[in-house]
Length: 524
Image (tube, rainbow, N blue to C red; front, side, top):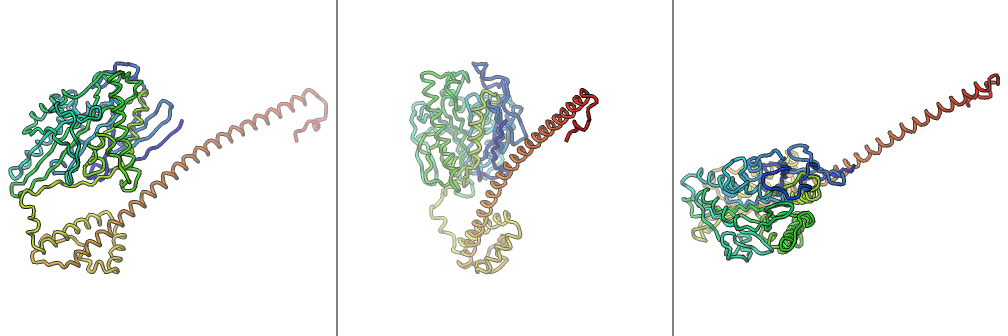
């Protein structure tokens, strides 16, 4: 039996979006969200065995085994509330704090993507069956109600689907070919899309229900109500502080991808077959973008093919821009679907290495030149405070010995003249006047520490790769050693048997000859 190991670096739940977080969900054999028409497809032969809460083993039809590790694995006994808690809650709270977030469900047809996103029904009252969408709505308004009277919120909801490479507005079906545009400072925008202003959770669920009813679905042998389009839900959260004339915006995007599928399994024909081809083409374009982002150093390839499909164009910010992104890989545990599950998990393993740069989207609602009203001294303090906060975070990542060496080098270079500059800035800056040279010193210190940390991370990755190679070689040598020992024991047993037969034959000859000289039959 062959074993192949796929190692994915684990980023804990406390990681604030530096990487695309990837989780996996294993569907129940008899799930509530789909009734397969072909009983052979959903058999009881299981191809996935759990290891722990972050890793499991998949066995394909050739009896090869693959070990996958992700940030979190939701097994068949996981509840909808568990998925929301670990997957969506941190991203929803980021959106309230004006940080963009994206949640994507990916997997084959019938693997549970739409059930995870919507639940049994978007208006579901049973809390156990509620999907991500109704829980997101509840969380948004709960967080907003806790903010008090000093903050004013507006939440807008848009809902589109990508059907046959056309972006359709599910709140206004007359808008069946929405254009995708990019605006500097705002990222990717959908021109003319309908935005519903929602005031409470009940109203939001009604809008969602009406939009879902307009979504394209079709019947296949894998799923009686198979989604024939990629559906995208966009919550825009605008926050305005009453004592400041400034609005900050956070965008929360949830993406229910259409299922990747093999035509021979779905039995697609005619229109459904054309839909399947378009779906697979856009998912292939998504895979190409992931490959381009992860195959180049620091995610900066010469060309990222975002424009190859409408899906990748809309997800441009989520994949390589300023978004806290989470990907949920939905899999079937059936052995007959092992090849599709393997493809889904490999996609997730690659996506784990996507980097994103989070930022808060803010717009000044007062005078555009308000920034220039600050005194020169205040502006200097603002710059120094920013660099000192960065420096403090960088120092926390370095061990004491490395930090001391860096500080000594900076003092020798004349970039750090006073050790007290390494300490956190005091909160009271009144009366302090900083020279431009001091600001440049802090910039140099920060930049040098950034370079050092990048080099350390690169060295750590190299060591991990070398360790993985050595571990594989060690396992191979152990197998060879075990094989040679078994062969040696077998050979030794054959020798003992041969020696015994020789003794038995000689003794028999001696008895038959009788009075002959025994020395003539001695064994030499």
